[in-house]
Image 1 (cartoon, one colour):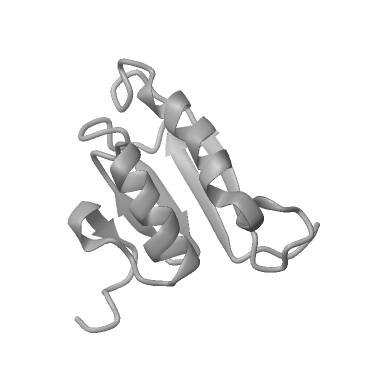
Image 2 (cartoon, rainbow, N blue to C red):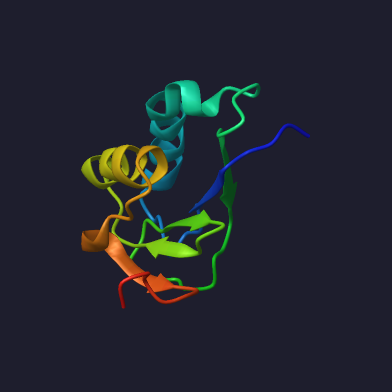
Length: 107
């Protein structure tokens, strides 16, 4: 497997995305990643969907690993910010974070 820098999961469960918005976001994510989605890019972003992240509220939900940053209420504008600010520049988008596996670096 080629190296990668981040792994993004979008929850498609019926509680997180009752209107099917998560599938739309997943398609948009593919386009927004551009060069970050290329298999031969050593800092690429792997992406995936999951039927459940175990939260079941506040969706659509998205989680970024290895940082373990959990985003809620993700819409198109939020996804654009997550890709540009977090995945490209390493700065999580505080406006949409509801959980972290580890404390924020400046906390």
